[in-house]
Image 1 (tube, rainbow, N blue to C red):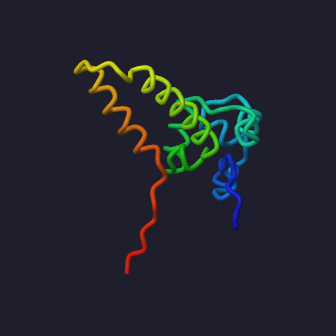
Image 2: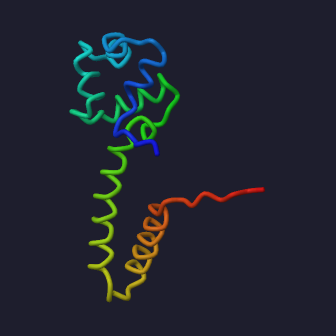
Length: 118
């Protein structure tokens, strides 16, 4: 079984023969050290860098940084769960709307099952 990496930036950069310094130029960074920190998962990409990398490689940030996505997802779902639990027992219309929305968030957060089509 293949182990998933937290960050695939190095793989994408090397696939296209780019050096860290060259990718840094494309991202508007001064040196390749910034790329090195991203690749080693020592630093999280800024939102601007994540979008820039999507433009450069044609790959969504979730594909480049799945470890970061998993971490953020876990934290956000815990926050949603806490607020959901706090709102229980309030029967107002607006609270019901919020609870329904949070239930949709929980559904979206569930892993998708692969179906075998024949």
